[in-house]
Amino acid sequence: MTKPHILQVGPYPEWDQGPLDAAYTVHRWWEAADKDAFLAEVGPKIDAIATRGDLGASEAMIAACPKLKMISVFGVGYDSVHLASCKARGIRVSNTPDVLTEDVADLAVAMLLSLVRKMGPAEAWVRSGDWAAKGVPPLTRKVSGTRAGILGLGRIGTAIARRLQGFGMEIAYSARGPKPGAEGWTFVPDAVALAERSDHLFVALAATAETRHIVNARVLQALGPDGTVINISRAANVDEAALLDALEGRRIAGAALDVFEGEPNLNPRFLTAPNVLLQPHHGSGTVDTRKAMGKLMRDNLSAHFAGQPLLTPVA
Image 1 (spheres, rainbow, N blue to C red):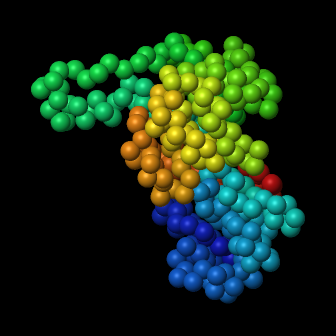
Image 2 (image 1 turned 60 degrees about the vertical axis):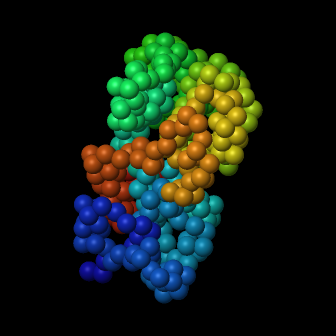
């Protein structure tokens, strides 16, 4: 029996690579020296694309695959997939939601605590000998009992809010509308108004054309000099130039970021900006969750080729 042809956009762990290689004829795009020539050669054979949320599938890549019927994304974000092309051609798209929700929410809260309590600088204080030589480091700020604003109350935003309840925090959120099950949390329809009533603004919404730079200079001004931003969603949701200006001008208290434009080659201003916590886009970065994500990505491919409904379709 002839195996379906898969275009694999980027590398996966061996626990996913082995099963993919066994089930499909896999064409490794990322290994090609001349990617355009590679696509011209293998594109007419491709039945499905296996990609990652950070890599997606461009309009040109999709156009080079006339037989393409399905794109399976390893990751919850699919904004890097050219959905207009998929819609026009009836190409199905799946992602891997739910299985990474808890890990991403864990990291978001850990980032808040690390940023506000300055855990990195405190460890450096100990390691440098300053604790013994100079005494205790400067005091930090309290987290429990403060006000959290959550921009985007989907799966991850909800999981963050539930964790913050344990810190006795006052929780408000913005979304397309009030969310069922969010009793006790205040719905605020506008990002600026949400920032005005928040000490800590969590960015947890999907990236779309409408949400691009939703956290802009006006939102940061509303957050104020004692406010912090925690972004575990997509870099495009935050205007990085405005954020860097606010950090360098000390117009906000700090930022904790797991995502960046052009990552891993982030803007070098972040490396010297005051009170910013930088993370390497690893919200889902545990063995347990990455295995679950890989399995769901592969299960969606299997469902497609078996003529069954996708487990987690997005288009």
